[in-house]
Amino acid sequence: MDKLVFLDSVARIAVFVSLLLAIFLLTVKTENKLANRLFACFIIFSAIDFSGLLTYSFPLKYVNIEFFRSTICLLEMPLIYLYVLAVCYSDFRLKWKHLVYTLPFVVMNFVLMPRIYLKSGAEKQYVLNHFNEMFEIYFFQILIEVQYWFYIVGMFLVLRKYKRIYLENYTNPSTSTYKWLFQMTCVFVVMHSITATKNLMRYTTSRDNFLWGNVLMVVMALCVICWFVMKALNHPELFRGINSKLTLTKDFLPKENNNISETVADKDEAILSQISALKKYMTEKEPFLDPSLTIQELANQIDIPVRDLSILINHHMNQHFFDFVNEYRIQKAMNILKNPSKKELTVLEILYEVGFNSKSSFNTSFKKHTNLTPTAYRNAS
Image 1 (tube, rainbow, N blue to C red):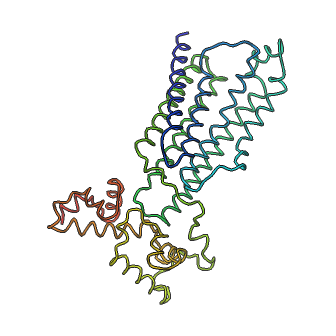
Image 2: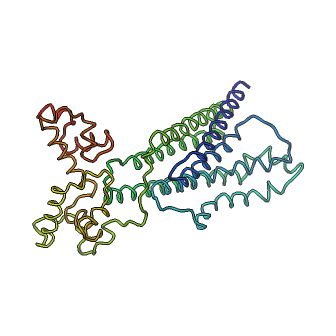
């Protein structure tokens, strides 16, 4: 009985905090309202899911509502998947076609209809006494697993494409959006693995162990939701979406030229001339000092089609646009760090001066190019 009381208390806290955070997300002012609303819906449905752990009783005629509530979990992963799309792509919009993601939820409720929703009286009571042995419950568990891993794989694929497009088209020194969403997806994998293990306890171990499994699951879920929302609030720069219509360089290169291992010596004179002119412009005009520089903006500045510039950098120079621009930033930072007349400048001031806007990103990029931290490089100069 103590375990039930403790589980009830934890579940009530989880429901309350989840709803509180959902209300906040729905009312807070933000540029990416769609992403916030999708995540708020996920939290609300999670709260509905948690409410199933409350130790309450209800009349037999309301059993259908409880079964319907239990199927709500089939809407959670679609919402998270859509949330990832909304965060990654600034031009993402909900469309009617996205209703297909509700299909498992609809199918499951149709499956429950003949032997559960349409029964009453003694037949309904029999269902309640033996529901763990019913085909519908086994089907429900399998459907949850298949759906969950389908969306997890989908999220990893979206993030992989996002990262590659970002590196080829943007130079903002923060790839935090990718890192954050990748961490979130990994956390979901761990959480679901624990939940799946807990569900197996229903059939393979004692009721006490199953109850403690429920407690652990709710506590961890509550911690993850709090961590997730607080991360979003404290780091609004994480959610810088990219245009989903951008294409990877390899996708529009002629197949016969799609050989990124080609050396400079093999390139014709026109390509070498373009590379030389680009490097001269970067050195003389220093467009990399703009922390939000994109390949589109640079193409406009040097008056060439963005497609040609993308091929030139990502294919002929065998570099991501992100790394290409950061090399100039790091080189300028190195010159400042070596300059005795600028020794009064702090590392933070220098990173902002050369086009970075994050100390961690600057340190990571600097060490990648020099094998030293900025402070160590300054002391060694």
